[in-house]
Image (cartoon, rainbow, N blue to C red; front, side, top):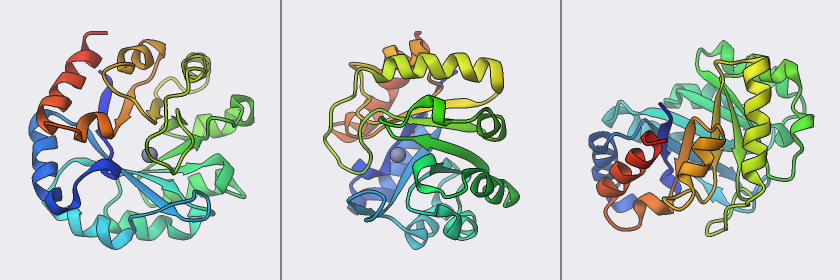
Length: 219
Ligand code: ZN
């Protein structure tokens, strides 16, 4: 069953505790935590201290998406802060395989992320065979309020074919402007982890999560 990962990027930090409890109750699978360094992406968001501070209050899986240059520098601290999954950008690592190995050595799951303009052919079979998740950005990373890139559906299908051949247990995660209008399309194309921000946090979070889960599960 595809998993739903509400993105904290759109949360209201005044009410974060309450929102985490609503996510749990409504059936969210992960909390998606975007970490931005102001260099790899033109924005800043969340560090180890913030992640560590919410770790004790929820059992939800912490899916940490590092939009950071050379994320290998922070792998151990992210694990200690409470990450269950760490995903890093192919474009941000001088040695992606070494970075993935460093993540796996800490005992957390590892993933590789591709920006919309990065060709799938740049993702080697060796990397696919090492990771627990391949994440495709369906908008340009780092800026809010962008539109879903329609070509993403073909990329998900193409990646689905490769994952089925090269590492069938690997998840396909999609991240960027996914809501009720397109969630069924991305699941039908082969995505198994759905990141969603604004579509869940605008209005009634609990109801929005339930509705999104219903749409995902009806595919
Ligand atoms: Zn993300």
